[in-house]
Image (cartoon, rainbow over all chains, first blue to last red; front, side, top):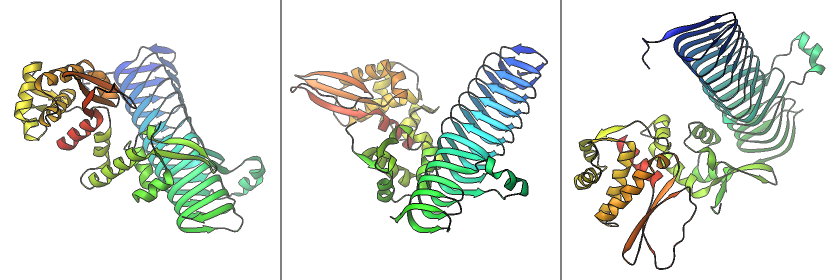
Length: 240
Length: 207
């Protein structure tokens, strides 16, 4: 599509549009777009709803946005809360608020500080989370770096380097500790280099496996090296 | 599913790859999602793969990854056809078709000298069958007809082209996602050509 013929779509206050091809789309206030959007920049500051698929180069949600289709964007920043009913395809995703995706997520770099919910698989080259998350399918990334700030869940985790760390405990954190479960729960972790803390998993398989504090692992299969801290529970470990 | 399955663990050992590589290839869609077969075993759920297919694919990836990037490889394996457009002369130059076959094709079809991917596939299939001497020119026309009529299907699904002959009468069929096909005893299967492999071969020649 030629860029020169594109106009802008701005909705301030209550308003609705039928969608189409635009340069910049800004929804301030309560904007509704009733079909597919193709734009260069998408910004939602109030409470926006798109009843279709969105393709954009740069998207930013600072308020509350709901996408009732797929979202395909080079760059997506979520500072507020966003809900995507279907799939999310994004090169660079940064979540500082809350994001929830009904389908799968495919990206290159995913950075999450906040809450992140994915219904199906989540794939990226780099997955970095200092947060609470829940992934219904497989979390698959070259480099997985998780700091646990709450209850984290993923059905399966696979990748090259997988690091799971407990966040540094603050004074307030220790006060509220009994109220929040800070752990990662998963059925299976597979990777080349795995370092875990506070993790509950049925099976862990890898080359170099390091099980840290507060882990409960059903079975560890390793190829080269295995180490375990004293207060970690490992049901069975074997070298293959 | 009657194929032999291989567990993930055995596969890694047999192919000499790591979990990281396997997951990377999965991410890049080099290994299709359908091949990840989940089965419950006594240790919980495990993933299995169709042995022959996955080993062949890994072998291909390992030999090609020296020259191509993973993204290029992904393009090569993906069934969705890339936007390629080549002229008749270029196809001949790149060794995809011979002059006689492409001229026969153009004569039957009466299309332009510019080839997009599905036409490239048609002419390539024709080339393979005619050059190997498995079919004659009349049968070539028939094959072409079948391919033309089902072009949209071919692009998306895994298809196999089968040419049979009985008492000198030939017939051509296109199998879509088929597992097996059986004929009556007098029928001779002249040629069977998985189109997916053809596409990969063409892409390998183009890249």
